[in-house]
Amino acid sequence: MNAEPSPPVTLLEFRDIAKSFGGVWALSGVSFDLRAGEIHALLGVNGAGKSTLIKTLAGIHTPDVGEIWMDGRCTPISSPADAMRLGVRVIHQELSLAPNLSVAENLFLGREPVRLGLLDRRAMERAAASLMRSLGFDELADVTVRVETLPMALRQLVEIARALSAAARILVLDEPTTSLTAAESAALFRKLEALRAQGVGIIYISHRLGEISRLADRITVLRDGRSIGTQDAAHLDAAALVKWMAGRAVAEVAQRPAMAAAGGVVLRAVHLRNARVRDVSFELREGEVLGLAGLVGAGRTELARALFGVDALEAGEIEIGGRALPHPSPAAALAAGLVLVPEDRELEGLIMDQSVAFNAALPWTARWLRRGSLDHALRRAIVQRALSAFAVKCANADAAVSTLSGGNQQKVLVGRWLESRPRVLILDEPTRGVDVGARADLFGVVRALVEQGMAVLLISSDLDEVLDFSHRIAVYREGRIRRTGAARDFDQETLLAELTATA
Figure 1 (cartoon, one colour):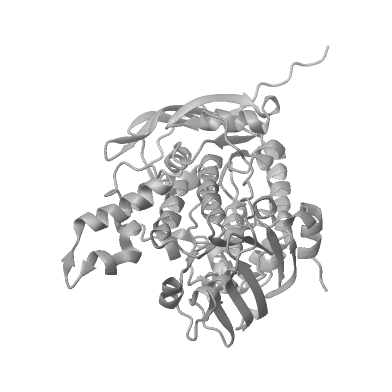
Figure 2: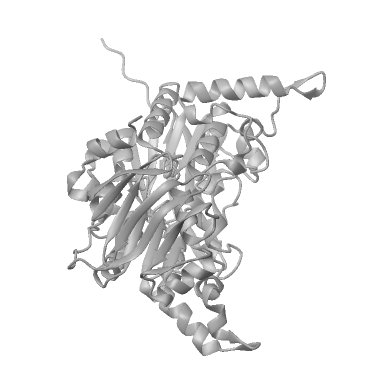
């Protein structure tokens, strides 16, 4: 007789977890279980409660109601140290690195190797380099560089490597691939599959449903802070998942705006140069979306920063509406009608401990604050226009912007710029950490503005996003535009081949 298969071992249970902030329930009666040797996807639109639930496991938040059980015992987790001791490792959506330390120092922070009572730096750096090789993170071969010098995508790899460097019984990943290339994501997936085979329980959060289909064994969906249900991943397709998460059907594809008759050139860059931008020239017309496609480290963000005047140019000219910007700066760019929505909304876009209203009205202070006199009505009107443009969900405009979901934070960041009716909008990774519903809302508004004549430079690591939303695509490698062509002339395979070419 064949032996009966062993029942799955339950590593973790959330039992009726509830958590409130300022009287608003972020979680309400959430139950969830994780088995040894499975990848369990935790899904939901922004604001559904995913990150709050994970932070209770990580010891950052303490539940108001409910219990956490591990290995069949009620196990309170009151601090991150408790979580670490129990073998819980979390890769948060918001990176938690020490920017002034090196890659190696971040990997082993708090558990540095010592020799004769002193830090063994050589051993630490050897171990760090070996870990990066084993993970296939070749871009981080030099583990002595400071994290603050790395682009966002490489910081994401450091955060992932740090979690994977320590033995884990439970591994949680919150949007781990938002800034990764296809090759880096594939290397991460192989590592996760190996950990699953070793019996590690993995909770995986992502808005990229293709990743869920590839990795997940089971899927649990949260909506409005409640657990809607759990199903085997094999029983669900992408359309069913989207409807399950949002409670309605949502278009996953960023639909390309209708292309009006050829408009005039609204942005012209001529032979731009600095340390990371190497002789870049291009034109962008009214009512056009130009997708800037490039791999991590290609210099896409550096080009955006140079266009907006954040980083100085050594040579070249920028024209907006036929007028040159003789001394490019953010103030000059804004005055000419060019705005930048940066890649890192927490460090470069929003002031997280300030209110939603403060952030929405901040760029327009000169309008509502004159000679020390505050025009309350004008300020409220500016805030209301920014929030209503994208249907931002928040308790009230006085709530700290840090209390909003990632998708709603992004809506605030983009929506506030519409006050100026910009001629050119640069979007750098606009859907990083944004769910399918918020993504559809964001692109829906931007599409309408493009059809009214606004020009968009779209920078995204999501090749489907670039292919689906752009009219033209510029292939960007090593600080240069290698080729520009109509979006219809590319597919994902040909675009990836051009991005990875060596010549």
